[in-house]
Structure formats: structure tokens, C-alpha cells
Image 1 (tube, rainbow, N blue to C red):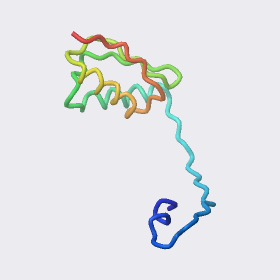
Image 2 (image 1 turned 90 degrees about the vertical axis):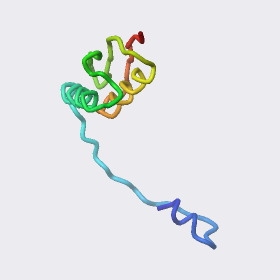
Image 3 (image 1 turned 90 degrees about the horizontal axis):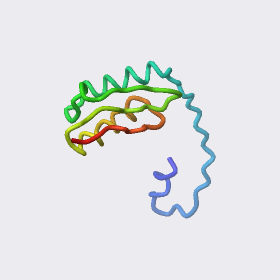
Image 4 (image 1 turned 180 degrees about the vertical axis):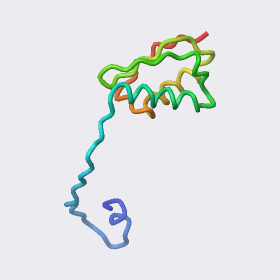
Amino acid sequence: AEDTAAGVLGVVEIENKLDVDSPEIEKTDREIQDDIEEQLFWSPFVDEEQVEVSVESGVATLTGVVDTWAEYNAAQENAYEGGATWVDNDLAVK
């Protein structure tokens, strides 16, 4: 809203008093692991059979061997998309 108001011709100052209340729904480690594995399954960039996933306290650890650096990076992105708060990417690249 602030960005929109700032783009209006003639606006010289904005006092933003908006308060956003969005409760975060925390997932369990098992839910995060399942969601990451689903992300990997559907990814056209990662062979999910080469990647092992474990999650502890929201931190995902990826292990295994992938074929390319692009696959390495895609797997890490999939882990974040699955809900990991941090990714310890221990994947090796052939």
C-alpha cells in the first residue's frame, strides 16, 4: 500500500500505520520433509532418487550425488519451497 501511495503524483510524504497480522502456521519436521520430497518428485530439474532428505528443527539436510550444479541448486530451492527454514546442502556433484 505504501509503494502504491508513493507512486501517486503529488504525494510528498507517507506515514504508514498499517499493521499486518498474519499468523504463521508451523509445520512439523515430518511435514516439511514430506513437502520437500514432493517438491523434488515434481521437479523437472532434479532426479529425486539421487537426493536423501532429513529435517531437524526445520533445517533440511540434503545428501546424495547429483549430476550437475544446476541440479544441486534446484534441489536446494525445492527444499526451501517445501518449508525448510535453512538448508544444509551436502549434495555432491559428479
